Image (cartoon, rainbow, N blue to C red):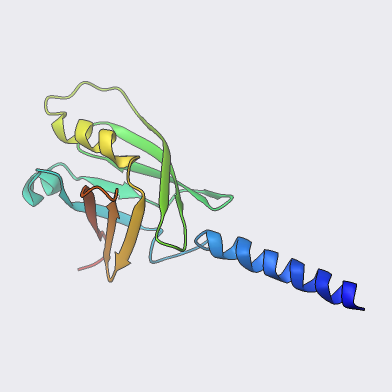
Length: 144
C-alpha cells in the first residue's frame, strides 16, 4: 500500500513540476499581436512609422510559440518559449532577405531579440529584457 501511495505522489509531483515550467498551451494575455513602443535609441514615432511588431499568435508545439515580427521591411520568424517564472527563450530567428533603404532598426532588433531572457506582462504591456539593461517594451495591438 505504501509503495502504491508513494508511486501515486511521485507521479502527481512530477506532473505538477512539468506543468509549472511552461506557460499553458493557450494564454490570451501573452499570445497576441504586440506593437514595439520602446527599444534602444529608436523613438516611439520611428517604431510606429515602421510598424514595428511581433506576433505571438502562431502554432504552439510542446509549449513553444511560433512567432513572427516586422520592423518595417523584412518578414521575420522565430520560436519562443515563455516560462512561468518570467524567463523566455527566443530561438530560430530568421528573416527574408530584402534590401531596404533603412535597415538600422531591423538590424538592431535581430541582434538583440534572441538575447532577451526575461519577460513581464503588466496590464497591456509586454517587456522583454536581457538582464544587462537592454529591454524591448510592447503594447498589445488590440488595446486602445
